[in-house]
Image 1 (cartoon, rainbow, N blue to C red):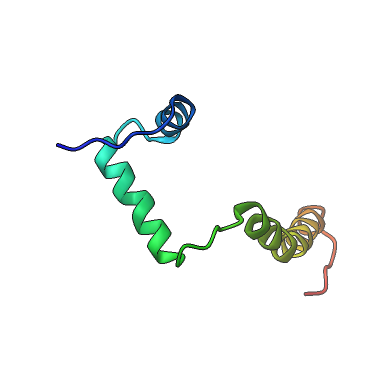
Image 2 (image 1 turned 180 degrees about the horizontal axis):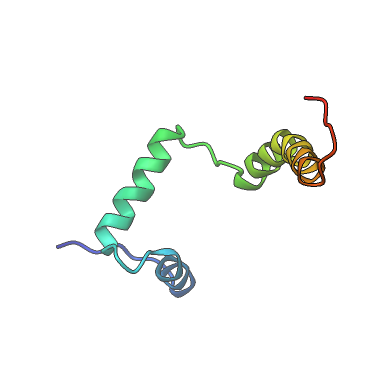
Length: 78
């Protein structure tokens, strides 16, 4: 078994992020696979979530409006 030297803060952050049901090795393999999959580019998760929210929000709002109108027995154009 080998070891990797990291500072205390990095180790602490690693331990916080590692799922409880994974070993250290499994988690490192997961991180490496994600790194390779994204060609080493940092993925901005917040930006991806914002884009999804913008694309979906209007549809969800319209569906909610139609559902309320339907529940109230009002005719809704589809």
